Length: 429
Image (cartoon, rainbow, N blue to C red; front, side, top):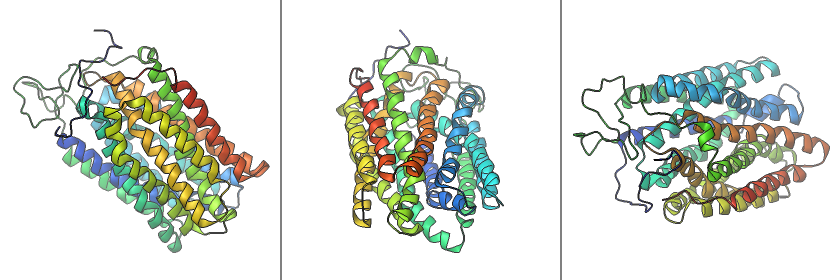
């Protein structure tokens, strides 16, 4: 079978498919991570500006996290293939926890920039690891549903996190960073104790060795020791150059870049500053606006994963790019809090429409029977690259022109990604 030929999998979503327990553990961990990240999100740009720096400099603090993620993403792919997903995941979580705690004690802008940047190293480690685990554990006919469930747990945390972060900021801008560090320590403990190192047999479908019980989401090959599978994956990895030969994979890299630019870059760096400078609001409104964006995404995730498994990946990504791009472009021209919240909801809806379909596309290319650390790392790198360039470019445009021009760039980037997707072929089988 060619590396580009999908396994003979059913393309029809089956709601009766039982998801492995390991996926539920990862979903719970994602929720805790998202709460902590959401608590920090509305505070970080303002904490940077407390050191008397410009808007562009404050945006760089947001970008540096994605910048280090981008630099170390190739290394994380190698670690996943050598150490296994579980060990890489736990180590990455602990690095981000230490970084967040250090940020709380930063004495100047440069210390904050350094500590925040170091957290990106751990972030890329646990992100690539989690994606690899989800691809290997998810039944092929439920990939969109699993992606929605995992992303939904992040969004649920992002809904409550920013609002809590805005309130915690009233007790000092340092407190949210310490709360984030504590949440990450809980995640490390959860994964270490509840995600066992079980074996995984190779194959094209969900790995299940002869004699394995039906309740096992991973194959437990006869005689496999506890260090196999998640600890030392044995599948032959999918080469990056092979994946780049698939038009849909190349297209998903562009939409990942656009989503990183919009949802992870401009939204985190510019929206809190826009709420303060243009609307005259405080950190509470900034936190609520991020939560509203997350609510819009969460609403879309209630059905977008299932539609990605039935309608296909491509239509959902095209629709999501269009809705998110228009929403982000309009956001910079809102003049009051009501419309600011309403447009944030629409932009979040667009992000939720395309999210599960993007991850399902990558899963289609890799398949369940092999690892794809470098392929996953590259997919993540494009999102991080967008999250780096977006805030820096937006900060420059705000200082030079206006917030409206800066937000409009997100529309232009989404349009370019949409054009790349038009000739790509559907990957769902």
